[in-house]
Length: 264
Image (cartoon, rainbow, N blue to C red; front, side):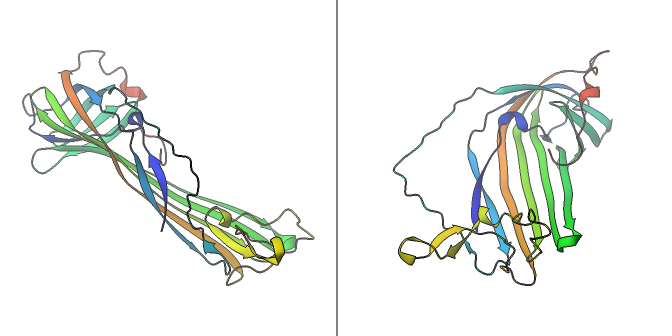
């Protein structure tokens, strides 16, 4: 299992999960001022790599350097104005940071506002004269959510974000490089895998990043590489202050709220 670092800045967390007592006649509708605590910690994401390259091995992580690096930040809170609009007593929408988050009242009297963005994509190349084919597919998912525990005009809670992705590369193992000399070498085996090759000093073998050449390297006639990435939830703490109900003109900014297509 390989790992990579996933960091999420405070301003990127724009979702809300509200729990606790309802207020002002049972409604949380109105304008809120959110104070978001900065989260500068990095999180290790898990990477699962699967492939059919016959000679490749997972790259060993080594740290032979004498250098040591320290990079620290101490940031003040961020302020974001949010607006909750209810469609009925048990559902509504939170507008926050230029985005819209649908929500519903939860068991126990709390509320949860969240949004999952999903992007599925596919890219293909073919060169018939050289019997060459290549494809890349990706599925990316990101979810944002805020937790509010309401007590009068003050609320506290957390803001969280989750991320996962799956990528798959496929490329024919052998093709006619005379008719298509620019074909091949598109599966990024070398990002995660190494192979041993002859040609080192004194006739010894050397370790180089893995690749797919015009020769046979993969099992089954097609080279395949799949990388699945899962990152643990990144969380910030927040406090929120209720500023009041909306007067005429207070909804002027709502037309800027929404959700873009796909993961963002």
